[in-house]
Image 1 (cartoon, rainbow, N blue to C red):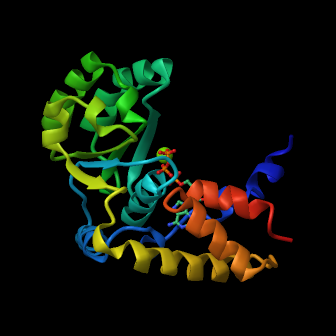
Image 2 (spheres, protein in one colour):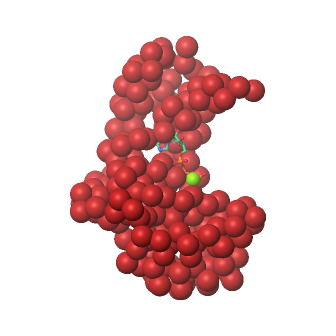
Length: 212
Ligand SMILES: Nc1ncnc2c1ncn2[C@@H]1O[C@H](COP(=O)(O)OP(=O)(O)OP(=O)(O)O)[C@@H](O)[C@H]1O
Ligand SMILES: [Mg+2]
C-alpha cells in the first residue's frame, strides 16, 4: 500500500492539531495553554482510554514549544532498550538553539518496573534540561514513584463538561469534514458521536463509512 493511502485515513485527518481542538475541561486546557505560553511544561502523565487524544496533545505540545523531541514506544522492548542507551546523551546535551527538549514515551504503562525505576532517576537528574511526557491507558501500571513525579491529566475525567464537550465535538467534526471537502449527514455524525464518545478514534473510523 502506498504512503498516500494512509494519509487519507480520517483518523489522521481528524487528529487535533491545535490545543483548542483537544477534548478536555476548559480549566485544564487553559492551564496547558499557560505552560505553553511560558515556554515549558512540567513532566506530564497523560492517561485515559484509547482514542481520547493523549498522543495528539503530546504532539501539539512538542510542536508549540518548537521542542527537540524523541519519541519512544514503551511497548516495544527494543525501542526502549535503544532509547535508554541514548537518553543520557539526549538529556545531557545542550540544545544548540536553546529549544526545550522533550522525551515522549508512548504506552508508558508497558514499561517494565525496572525501566520505570531507572527513568525515575533520569527525570530528576535532567529536570533542568528535559521534560518527559508519558502517555498511558492504565495509569495504575505505573509505579507510584513515577506517578508522584508527574503532573497527571486524566482524559476520562471531563467533569461536568461532558455534554458541552460532546456538542463541541459534533460541531467541530462537522466543520472539519466540510473543510476536507467531504459530504455527510450531520444527523449521522451526531448519532456516531452519541454512540462512541469518548473514543474519538472510533468516531473517526465510523465516519469513514459515512462520508463521500
Ligand atoms: N479532540 C479530537 N477531535 C477529533 N478527533 C480526535 C480528537 N482527539 C482524538 N481524535 C481522533 O482519535 C485519534 C486518536 O487520537 P490519539 O492518538 O491522540 O489518541 P490516544 O489517546 O493517544 O489513544 P491511545 O490510548 O490508543 O494511544 C486521532 O487520530 C483522531 O482521529
Ligand atoms: Mg496514543
